[in-house]
Image 1: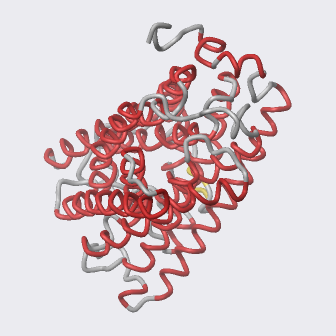
Image 2: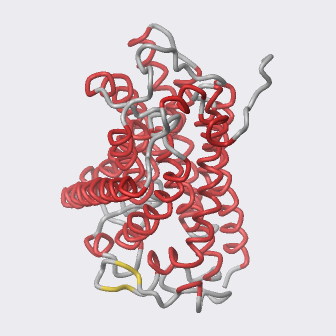
Length: 409
């Protein structure tokens, strides 16, 4: 056991935790003021639900001893046998309980990302049930497939350093299905739905960027050179994507917005996540530039063309950005950065790009089908969407009995 590695991962765990409150602010500023508290509540209640679910059953399903490459066994139910000694299968220099806590923060933020697509219209009880079921039947098996020892996508050779498939593609495509099933917000296209507090969103984006260093660098699972490389790649891709978004937005709309620059940074962070510990800093510039561009185009053009209401662009940033990042890893990965990885297309190994594409297709198909089934099942026993009257009043008051601001503000 290494105390330096342990201290680093504990700090990284705290950084990843901060991302979910940061996400709450990022999303909260983008909704109308009558729905800001309900939007913040989505992220906060996820912290509570998943922190307990992960201890009870989530961790063992995701990282427990493998069962046919599909799921972890129940050997570690309630963290039985998970203590202060390292688990050499995952992190030989830190306590197993620390590795568990680090992974718990990934499990927390992922369903919170989905909430951006259903903001301002989903009933709170339905959201709570959805989060619990989605984490158990979507996130936990997928985490085992990609990261678990024996998981079939890991065995296939798919690379996902910090959550391209597990976090971003899964949440992004699930967000799209949720938005389609819930339908559009009342008055969309007829009423103003402009963000009510852009400084709040920018603050949230800053906290996400800050926490993302723990997200990606911490995934090296040690205070080492690989962590440093992932740290630099993370910042570089975010910066490149923010600039790309600002430039493309200026050409498209005539102005570069602060909201756009913040969204672009998040898109870059998403795009670099799967390859942060496998690519060079020069590659991360390109990954960020393309990530910022494709996410902007997805949000600006696809929503209008296909008519879905992804309220806060969870699919546009995380689904599209995560897909690009996973494929980019297949192009730019190099064993000179991480000998445990593989060379990608750019370094003479086209097969890795094919493996990455297969892993993306499997992830998308699984999450889309599972999310559809979960939401339809919930809809059989309770309403998914608030009433027209509740939506008009605002979810803060109608669902939570609170208002964020004085009526004089």
